[in-house]
Length: 113
Image: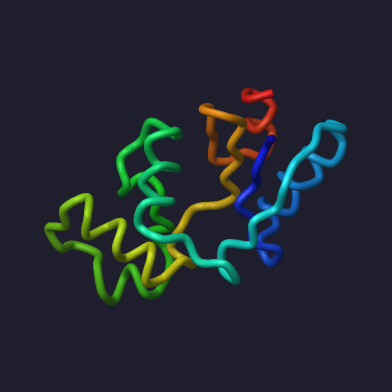
C-alpha cells in the first residue's frame, strides 16, 4: 500500500496527491499536521528516504529560523523538532513499501511505483 504524508494547504503536496490519484494505484492519505508523527515513525520514514534528518527540514519556516537555525543539533534533536513542530517536515512524502521519496518535484513520486 502506498502512503502519502500530505498537507492540503501545500501546492506541491496537492500536486503529489493528484499524481497518485491518476496512477490508479491504491493509497492512503495521512494528514500529518492533524495526525502528528512520533519519533519512531519519523525515524522509519527518514530511514526509507535514505537521508539525514536535516534533509527533511523545511529550513524557511519561521520556527526553524527563530529556534534552530545555526545551532549544533544532533539528529535526535532535529527529529524532536519535527515531532514538536510537524510544519517543519518537508512534503509530500510518499512511501511504497520500503521505498520512499519527498515529492519535490511532484513527478519524483513516479520513481517508487
